[in-house]
Length: 485
Image 1: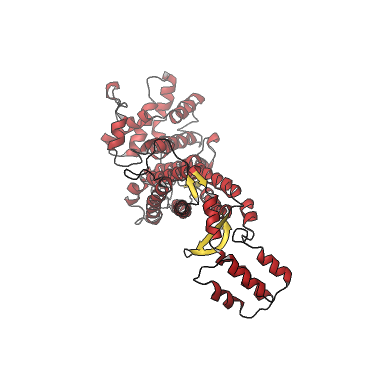
Image 2: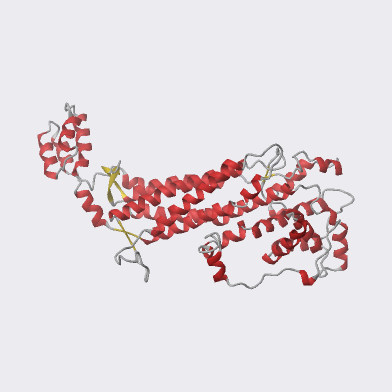
């Protein structure tokens, strides 16, 4: 039985609210403390964003059905199509609240969307002719669909938009900054540390380039994962569709709705051809794993930069009025990298649960995925917040070449590697062992190494080349590698 329309006085509206109070009483810091940083993602991944996509999917299916060739549902007029597309384009938080009001009666969110759409097709603002046309077609709204046909497709649209409009641009901003730093600091020598001990020198730019290349590859994986959707009925067999009209090629019809570009009335996704009641969520697991992998790389970067700041390799630009410690006035803490690390860890905990849980469903469907899916935005929100914090931290960094140079000048032992390698080239017996005895666990000076070099039975030009080495210029191909990134 159709749900009666709400009286005008019953229409819900957005109440004015004290946003400051809301910010400090919100259960999630994403909606409270950090809300202003996540507005674009809120509109895509919130319940309002989900409801918006449901309306988009219902409208796309409804319009396509009118062109399917059923005598009972002739093609919609241009005016009807314009009205329906306007419902999608102009969908607002007030519309979400109106649907939620209907849901209080139906206790079913997708059915509430259906009823809301039917009401919009009978709006008093429409012409009598348009109301009559849409009224006759009203029962084709949500025709042959199970709720999951609408929901899984809406989730795919949400993730596609969040990926292209928020996540990838944020990652790209980090990538651009890392490339800038890799090139800027390509020639600045830096002492490496393997196992926390002094090791062969590198350059600051080359170390940044290492991360840059990893993030670029991880970003590519995020970008290439197809967003899948299914619209094939209650258990994936088009049962109701065939019962209604066996002459229509329903798999092809479904593919047309799912895969046609939005400019042609479709949804711009990729059809999942085999499913139970729900889309299997394997592509989601792939996507969340790819984001988590990117986040892990950025945790690695955040911790390394935190350490380099601690060593004095980088200073941080001061921000007027900012306080580092309530009791130690001198402190300038690496808070952006700490914030990034914490949020990346939170994001990954959620992303990994999503990727492990969502592909599992008992028999043809259980509801345990529903509440988990509602937390996709939380996982993406912590990721986005981390990317912003990381970029802010990178933009505050100032290189401290004096600290880098001083560290190098105190680590002449790192030249044991090239000396013993040249000795071995010229057949000097026990080359490695000689350098080990001279340098391992000992303070080594320039004079110690030069004294050894003068005694070596190697060509004179090789001696001169070794005597010209310093910890600051023993960087191999690091400069070129950094500039090539």
